[in-house]
Amino acid sequence: MRKADPPGRRVLRLAVREQRRDVAVGAVLGMGHQTGEALVPVLIGLAVDEGVVDGDVPGLLLWLVILAAVYVGLSFSFRGSARAGERASLTTAHRLRAELVARVLAPEGGAEEGRLPGELATVATEDAKRVGAVMMALIVAIASATGLVVGAVVLLGVSLPLGLLVLTGAPLLLWLAHLLSRPLERRSETEREQAARSSGVAADLVAGLRILKGIGAEHTAVSRYRRTSQESLTATLRAARAEAWQNAVVTALTGVFLALVALVGGQLAARGDIGVGELVSSVALALFLIGPLSEFSWVYAELAQGRASARRIADVLDARRAVSPAPASGRTPVPREGGGPGLPLRLRGLVHGPLRDLHLDVAAGETVGVVSTDPADAAALLRCLGRRCDPEAGSVELDGTDLTAMDLTQLRAALLVAEHDADLFEGTLLENVTAAAPPDAPVAAVLTASAADDIVRTLPDGSATPVTARGRSLSGGQRQRVALARALAADAPVLVLHEPTTAVDAVTEVRIAAGIREIRAGRTTVLVTNSAALLAVTDRVVLLDGGRLTASGGHEQLARACAPYRTAVLS
Image 1 (spheres, rainbow, N blue to C red):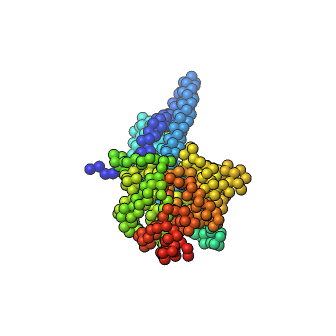
Image 2: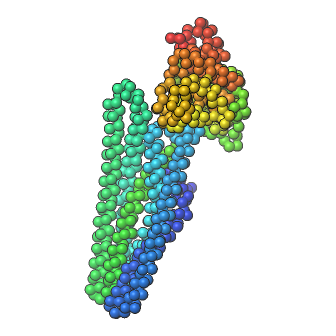
């Protein structure tokens, strides 16, 4: 049975397969360049023998013309090889970035679990770039190996001892360089992990900068980042020391090897076994060999770092998915998608986290409020409704179809869960509101229903006013209203809103409650909230207490007759 490739190696293998054309072109041109470089000392030796030793001036001129033509070919082959290598490197990095973004944004989720946003950004940028650099390293490795082989063959023609010395010594030197790259690979992986962690902590702190300043926690935040940054610096220095040690040892070994080649060549010339031109060629070839051997030191460093980055990329791409997509053969399309009338929603014996044997029927077009005495109960319910996880037992059905049998993209177009802490994006206010809206969405009505029209009137360019990342240019209440407007503009058949008015005043909250009721007429709406103003406009309310539904009725009825409900909503 064939052993499966390690994840990192699989990423590298696929990357090379995707770019095999550019890698092949770059390698062929690089081989031609190295062959020409190895032949230059031979041509110089021939020119010396004919022009200097034999005094043949026409012969000397001929070899000089040939030498000039070889240099022209060297120029074009080098540029072509470098261009193909850069194209392969950049294309690989771009493709990996696209795959990583697609995996992070996949409806099944899971890739972001346990990773800070900044860490994922580092994987998608620096690690993808390092894997891309492996394409260039492969081209350089093939070209350098060609240079070594051609140089050894030429030396065999000049002298059998010199050729055998190179043919036996070069592989041994390359093997030693490979062994020296192992510590660098391990330390490089640690360095990338620490760097990604440091970037993630920095992004996390910047995102919460306003909150940190508000609670006076700047010193704690700075200390946390300083500690993480110091760990990253330590890992980087250790990787740099490993790379420097590898380069130094390989350079020293290369120097010893070339000195040995020069010594043997000199002794052969002193005994008269090789001529003056051959001695010149041998010494020049020995100097030429410094290039390919030094290139291998760089190649091993790039491969070591590329393998470490490939493993980190594979960890994200292979991350366990939070939910399983429906089998392609059994996928059930969501009935009456987008913009149509409301769809019935049903929970049957739902068990997840704190939720226990939850039964709930929401009729098509009904507005139902869900009050929870424990925020953990509401959070678990939202995760199941949005299918960010699958329940441990029981089911959630939309229009009679289990959510697990539906395509996730279609499902989330029909059943939209708008979280309490939804972020805004960089762009204009209008672009944020219409991000998921159909072309004919009633934007003005949506802005009015969410009380976001007041925001539009106060901004210098109205709805065309730019909004910074995460909506930091707006106040908390403004961000919440724009996020609500975005959810309403999507016009989903089933909309679940989680505490959409916690950052607005009481008057605005009453206005928003009426606006939601009006604009969602005919659509199914679930309000997971403890707001009395919102619950007052629902058709009925259910109480979630201790993970179970313990009461159901109108808002006023429950406020009078149910003490736990009264405590949760009115206290």
